[in-house]
Length: 333
Image (cartoon, rainbow, N blue to C red; front, side, top):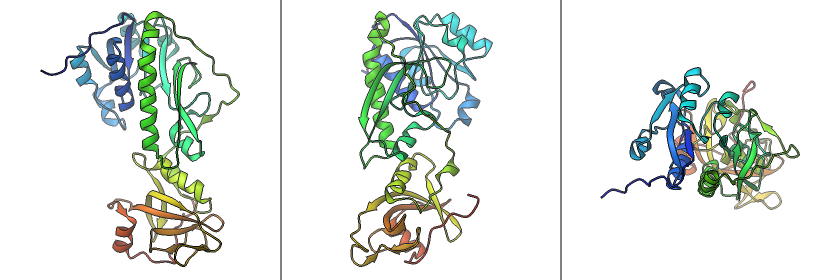
């Protein structure tokens, strides 16, 4: 027999708002923890088609017999009326791409809750995981917050921290963020039901807001240090648009790289570390490129725009890449 969905263990009425995988993962954990989800709000079908990373919630709604409402926004008069009719004790807004109005924030008894993939107040704003890697942060985490009218400024309800190690990429850090979110929700749902959770104001001592990133922000500056460039590549690799440069006048994505630690003027078997930034020095054991001031970066996975992604060996063979060629960034990019 198939597994039967868990019967809600708790009474607090929860409305869940979300549209991407992060939200779906969190909703699943709320249900597994015994949360009493009385409705799911997600995007209309036309917005679903236009939203990168959007996922369907219909399967969970069907499995747990939860009404699902497809809306363009939580803030329209129709949506506000719907939410009021549902009489929520709490609203979880996780993996939703739009701000929630003050009117909606005031509806539930215990307020609205959301998550942010950093240790707030650090790294408020867009793309916190990518920025954490770019900034060479050694520790980051996930924050469950009580939403207010600001952007990532609400009181902290729970936090989980974890290390970013040198092998991590944006994908593996997001996996850690997701696991931290699951753990926080598992611990929080009983506290929500009893009304015994605590709230801690963020303060502004470490506050910093991050700008929105666009695909074109991924351009590589070969004059930066090998560590900066390694972090740049791993922060922007799959599932993100990728760090990129230009070779032979064509856009080239770099999906994986590693730092080489050279001794004096040589690296490995006779590979000179001298060369203008962006110059290919060797293709014998990785595509070794001069960067910064006498440093080296080895490129391991590459892809010309609209062509297949290759390992460095396949790339060298397919495109006959040779030492002396140079990656570049055209002016204006």
